Image (tube, rainbow, N blue to C red; front, side, top):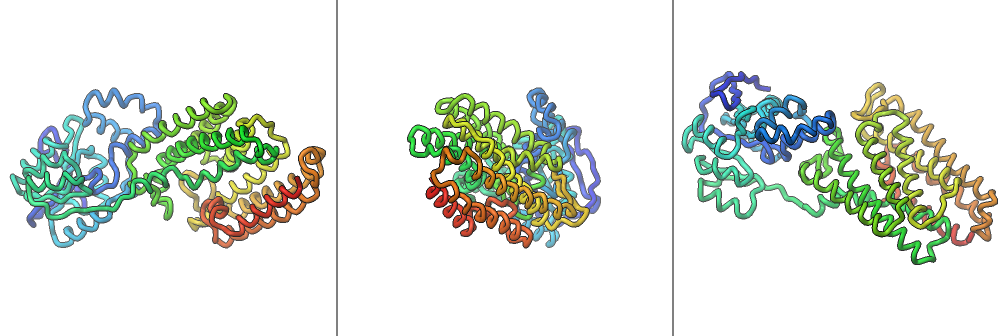
Length: 495
C-alpha cells in the first residue's frame, strides 16, 4: 500500500500526491465511478446514510441545493465507505496492475469527494496521485478537463472513462480508453483522440432483473394456495382466481422487499462467497435502479390488491411489508427473534391466502405452519454458519449467532419440525377433520412423509450438502417433489 502526502494545488480541488517522484510517461488518468468501480460512490454513500442515519436523508435536498460537490462532502463526513466491500471492475483493475508493474504513473481523477477517493487509492496502492472534488468544486466534465490540462499539459495524458461527460476530457487527452461505451460513444471519442482500448463486460439486463426480483423465491408464495386446498375450495373458479391475484400481488410485494434487503445488505453480501454475485452486490444493476424498482413493484402490489382483493388482504400486505422492512433493518440481528419473525412471515402468507378467498384459517393449520416454518428458519440460520465455515467464537455480519451455536440451532430446528408433525397427527384425530374428509385415517400416511422430509433436510444440512437457503432443496431436489406428489395423492384419496 502506498502512502500519500495530501496537498492542495489550489484552493478548489483536493489533490493527494505520492511522496516519491515518478516520471515514466505517458501518465494514465483513471475515472472512478462506473469505470474502476462497477458502482457510484455517491449512491453508495446515500445508501449507507439511509441505513445508518435515515433521519439525515431529509437533509439531502438541502445539501443538493448548495451544489453536487457540497452534497458529496456532507455525505463523506457522515458515512465511511469500506473500499474492501466495493465492486471493482476486475478487467480494468487487472489492466491497471499490469501498467503499474511496468512503471507507468497512474492518477485517480474522479468527481467523487477526496475522502472516499483517497481511501480507495490507498486500498489499491496503485496511484501516485489523486485528483478529487471538495466542498466547492465538483471535479467532473469541464472542471476535470481543465485540471488535467493544468497538471499534465495538452495531450500529456491518457484517460480511462465511461460516458459522454468524458468527451470533454478526451478532447485534450493523448489517447482514450473506454469502459462499456455505448455504440455512439466510440465514434465520438475517436473524433477527439485515438481510442486504444475498450473494456467491455458482457451484460444480460433481463437476466439480472429476473435475478434481482428473485422470481425463484416466489415459490414461497405458493403457501397462499394452502387455505384454498385445505378448505377444498379449489373447484370454485372465483376463489381460485382470487388466490391467483393474491399470489401475484404478494410476489410483487416480496420482490420489492427483496431488493430493499439486497441494498441494505450490500457490504455483507459482497463479503459472502455466493451472495456477492447478486445483481446489486456485483454492480450488474445500479443502486438508483434499485431505488426505482422498490416503489414501482410496491405500487404494483398495492394496486393489484386494491382492485382485485378484500381490504383485509391489503392490510396484511402492509403488515408483511412493515415486518420485513424492520427485519431487514435491525430485527435480523436479534437472536431467536429473527427466526420467529421468519416463521411468522411464512405464516402470514397462509393467512393472506385465507383472507383472499374469504376462508377462516383453523388453529390447526396455523400451529402446523408456525412449527414447520420455524424449523425451516432454524435451518437457514444453521446453513449460514455452515456455509461460511464460521469458527467456534466467530460470528457473521448482521447476524446474532456464532459458530458454537450450530449445535443448539440444529436441536431447536429438528424439534420444531417434529412438533409440526405432532400437530398434524393431533389434527387427524380432531372432530374438524371429519367435516372435510370421508377417509381421514388415510391422512396418517402423510406423517411418515413429513418425518422423512424434515429428517432428510437436517441430515443433508449437517453434511453441508444443502444450499444456504433450504427452499432451494424443495425446488431442485427430486425427493422433495416425490414427497409433495405423494402427499397430494394421499389428501385426494382421503377426501
